[in-house]
Length: 161
Image 1: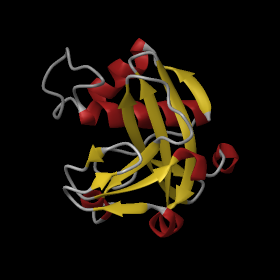
Image 2 (image 1 turned 90 degrees about the horizontal axis):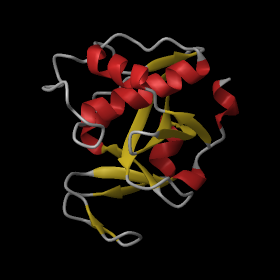
Image 3 (image 1 turned 45 degrees about the horizontal axis):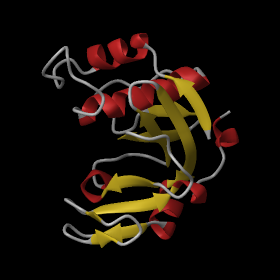
Protein backbone atom coordinates (compact mmCIF):
# COMPACT_ATOMS: atom_id res chain seq x y z
CA UNK A 1 0.00 0.00 0.00
CA UNK A 2 1.26 3.44 -0.94
CA UNK A 3 -0.16 6.56 0.73
CA UNK A 4 -0.41 9.72 -1.42
CA UNK A 5 -1.73 13.19 -0.60
CA UNK A 6 -4.75 14.32 -2.63
CA UNK A 7 -3.90 17.83 -3.74
CA UNK A 8 -6.20 20.56 -5.02
CA UNK A 9 -4.26 20.28 -8.28
CA UNK A 10 -5.28 16.62 -8.69
CA UNK A 11 -8.93 17.44 -7.94
CA UNK A 12 -8.87 20.35 -10.41
CA UNK A 13 -7.28 18.16 -13.13
CA UNK A 14 -9.87 15.44 -12.53
CA UNK A 15 -12.74 17.93 -12.83
CA UNK A 16 -11.33 19.38 -16.05
CA UNK A 17 -10.56 15.95 -17.50
CA UNK A 18 -14.23 15.01 -17.57
CA UNK A 19 -15.90 18.40 -17.45
CA UNK A 20 -18.76 17.17 -19.65
CA UNK A 21 -19.64 14.49 -17.06
CA UNK A 22 -19.22 16.45 -13.86
CA UNK A 23 -22.26 18.66 -13.50
CA UNK A 24 -20.97 21.09 -10.86
CA UNK A 25 -17.71 22.81 -9.99
CA UNK A 26 -18.64 22.04 -6.39
CA UNK A 27 -18.76 18.27 -6.97
CA UNK A 28 -17.14 16.47 -4.07
CA UNK A 29 -15.23 13.23 -4.09
CA UNK A 30 -17.98 11.32 -2.30
CA UNK A 31 -20.81 12.70 -4.42
CA UNK A 32 -19.50 11.90 -7.88
CA UNK A 33 -18.34 8.49 -9.09
CA UNK A 34 -16.68 9.86 -12.19
CA UNK A 35 -14.68 12.31 -10.12
CA UNK A 36 -13.61 9.55 -7.74
CA UNK A 37 -12.43 7.40 -10.64
CA UNK A 38 -10.52 10.22 -12.33
CA UNK A 39 -8.82 11.21 -9.08
CA UNK A 40 -7.70 7.60 -8.57
CA UNK A 41 -6.35 7.41 -12.11
CA UNK A 42 -4.48 10.70 -11.78
CA UNK A 43 -3.03 9.66 -8.41
CA UNK A 44 -1.59 6.47 -9.95
CA UNK A 45 -0.49 8.21 -13.16
CA UNK A 46 1.26 11.01 -11.27
CA UNK A 47 2.85 8.69 -8.70
CA UNK A 48 4.38 6.47 -11.39
CA UNK A 49 4.96 9.27 -13.92
CA UNK A 50 2.73 7.58 -16.50
CA UNK A 51 0.40 9.72 -18.65
CA UNK A 52 -3.31 8.84 -18.39
CA UNK A 53 -5.04 7.77 -21.59
CA UNK A 54 -7.53 9.95 -23.40
CA UNK A 55 -11.19 9.87 -22.36
CA UNK A 56 -12.19 7.60 -25.26
CA UNK A 57 -9.99 4.66 -24.29
CA UNK A 58 -11.30 1.62 -22.42
CA UNK A 59 -8.38 1.61 -19.99
CA UNK A 60 -6.81 4.35 -17.84
CA UNK A 61 -3.03 4.05 -18.12
CA UNK A 62 -0.51 2.04 -20.11
CA UNK A 63 2.15 0.40 -17.91
CA UNK A 64 4.73 -0.94 -20.34
CA UNK A 65 2.48 -2.90 -22.70
CA UNK A 66 -0.17 -3.59 -20.01
CA UNK A 67 -3.48 -1.78 -20.46
CA UNK A 68 -4.41 -0.86 -16.91
CA UNK A 69 -7.73 0.15 -15.37
CA UNK A 70 -7.66 1.97 -12.03
CA UNK A 71 -10.61 1.04 -9.80
CA UNK A 72 -11.20 3.58 -7.04
CA UNK A 73 -13.43 3.75 -3.97
CA UNK A 74 -14.10 6.78 -1.76
CA UNK A 75 -14.18 6.02 1.95
CA UNK A 76 -14.79 7.84 5.23
CA UNK A 77 -12.02 5.89 6.95
CA UNK A 78 -8.53 4.84 5.86
CA UNK A 79 -8.59 1.41 4.17
CA UNK A 80 -7.68 -1.83 5.91
CA UNK A 81 -6.35 -5.03 4.29
CA UNK A 82 -9.69 -6.84 4.61
CA UNK A 83 -11.62 -4.08 2.79
CA UNK A 84 -12.78 -4.87 -0.74
CA UNK A 85 -11.81 -3.62 -4.15
CA UNK A 86 -14.80 -3.81 -6.50
CA UNK A 87 -15.34 -4.08 -10.24
CA UNK A 88 -18.95 -3.72 -11.42
CA UNK A 89 -19.86 -6.64 -13.67
CA UNK A 90 -21.31 -4.34 -16.34
CA UNK A 91 -17.98 -2.58 -16.77
CA UNK A 92 -16.13 -5.80 -17.59
CA UNK A 93 -17.76 -5.90 -21.02
CA UNK A 94 -16.54 -2.37 -21.76
CA UNK A 95 -12.97 -2.77 -20.62
CA UNK A 96 -9.99 -3.41 -22.81
CA UNK A 97 -7.56 -4.12 -19.99
CA UNK A 98 -4.85 -6.50 -18.90
CA UNK A 99 -4.74 -5.52 -15.23
CA UNK A 100 -6.41 -3.55 -12.45
CA UNK A 101 -4.87 -1.21 -9.91
CA UNK A 102 -7.05 -0.58 -6.86
CA UNK A 103 -7.10 2.79 -5.07
CA UNK A 104 -8.91 3.87 -1.93
CA UNK A 105 -9.57 7.58 -1.28
CA UNK A 106 -9.91 8.79 2.29
CA UNK A 107 -12.13 11.87 2.34
CA UNK A 108 -10.45 14.60 0.29
CA UNK A 109 -7.14 14.11 2.06
CA UNK A 110 -5.30 10.94 1.13
CA UNK A 111 -5.25 8.25 -1.52
CA UNK A 112 -4.01 4.74 -0.94
CA UNK A 113 -2.75 2.74 -3.91
CA UNK A 114 -3.64 -0.71 -2.60
CA UNK A 115 -2.25 -3.17 -5.14
CA UNK A 116 -2.67 -4.72 -8.55
CA UNK A 117 -3.91 -7.91 -10.21
CA UNK A 118 -4.32 -9.16 -13.77
CA UNK A 119 -7.89 -9.22 -15.05
CA UNK A 120 -7.74 -13.01 -15.49
CA UNK A 121 -6.50 -13.66 -11.97
CA UNK A 122 -9.03 -11.18 -10.59
CA UNK A 123 -11.89 -13.07 -12.25
CA UNK A 124 -10.56 -16.37 -10.84
CA UNK A 125 -10.06 -15.13 -7.27
CA UNK A 126 -12.79 -12.53 -6.77
CA UNK A 127 -16.24 -13.20 -5.35
CA UNK A 128 -19.11 -12.57 -7.76
CA UNK A 129 -22.27 -10.91 -6.43
CA UNK A 130 -25.61 -10.49 -8.17
CA UNK A 131 -27.81 -7.46 -7.69
CA UNK A 132 -29.50 -7.82 -4.29
CA UNK A 133 -26.89 -10.23 -2.88
CA UNK A 134 -25.61 -9.45 0.62
CA UNK A 135 -21.88 -9.56 1.28
CA UNK A 136 -21.79 -11.30 4.66
CA UNK A 137 -18.34 -9.89 5.47
CA UNK A 138 -19.75 -6.35 5.76
CA UNK A 139 -23.56 -6.69 5.38
CA UNK A 140 -23.50 -4.63 2.18
CA UNK A 141 -26.40 -5.25 -0.20
CA UNK A 142 -25.19 -5.01 -3.79
CA UNK A 143 -27.16 -2.56 -5.92
CA UNK A 144 -25.67 -4.02 -9.09
CA UNK A 145 -23.80 -7.18 -10.04
CA UNK A 146 -20.13 -6.88 -9.07
CA UNK A 147 -16.91 -8.71 -8.29
CA UNK A 148 -15.08 -8.10 -4.99
CA UNK A 149 -11.60 -8.97 -3.82
CA UNK A 150 -9.99 -8.08 -0.51
CA UNK A 151 -7.04 -5.75 -0.72
CA UNK A 152 -4.81 -8.28 1.08
CA UNK A 153 -5.16 -10.62 -1.93
CA UNK A 154 -3.70 -8.07 -4.36
CA UNK A 155 -0.11 -8.11 -5.58
CA UNK A 156 2.44 -5.53 -4.54
CA UNK A 157 2.97 -2.47 -6.63
CA UNK A 158 6.55 -3.20 -7.61
CA UNK A 159 5.18 -4.62 -10.88
CA UNK A 160 4.20 -1.08 -11.90
CA UNK A 161 7.70 0.32 -11.51
